[in-house]
Length: 336
Image (tube, rainbow, N blue to C red; front, side):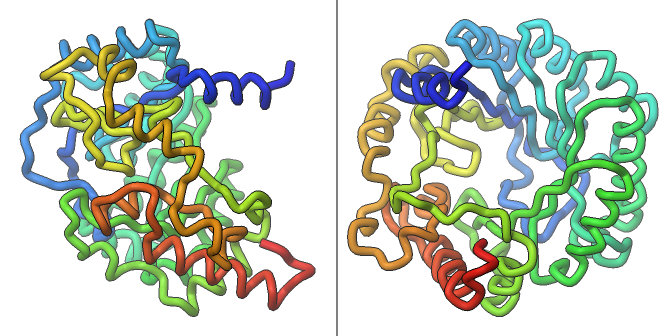
């Protein structure tokens, strides 16, 4: 089977492939880099969530990401997961793990959750707990990782790379290796969804970013075409805890609301989504002449939060592309 050809067909035909749903903004931690807005009451009831999942399933979606906030804080989380699995979604749970013990891990397995991503912000209690704002969170998170691993479920450690935990990345790799699980690093840090820039204070310095690309992203591809684009809004959608529809959770650009239209109607008829799909062939207005386009893996969420525009350059993507080009030039035999 030509999976590449199949996916290209899905993209070309704008077939919904994956859905992310933010079932709550409530969280028991206070992470320094978090983009979520706190103290906003959730508007999605279990009935609303089930209706969205039903319509997404009817549109053909296969993959579902359940996120928050901390999704385990919803009292009806098991109802949400059970319904998603019954609709045959390959269901992934994003969590900080602090509310998952042996019983919860067993229940996740028995419910049929496909995969769990757990955020680990450091290799030591002092670093992790400082970044989460919660003493004892490191041990709770590590315990959840072990319990989920013991069930045989798929699991990965995810680490937003910050200036405060940069020195511990190799030790985080070792923790994952010792447990026999994947680790995923990302140095992309977003402003808050309202544009507040406080999380950006924790981005890597230029020196750290260059070192990161040299030491931790050697397998990353250089963009060969110079026209890198994301399939946001073409094969994926996201639903916020307020019922707003976004082309991706990282792109809080409103394309509809489930309180005004059905999920299906938004997917098929939203003029904002149609514009995204039209413009996606030319993803950045500066790409033609940009000297860094072959090293650029930009995110439209950064552009939207910085300039309230899509398909324009943003400072962080440009900085990272510049660093990638520098590293490749300095170490040509160790291309990132």
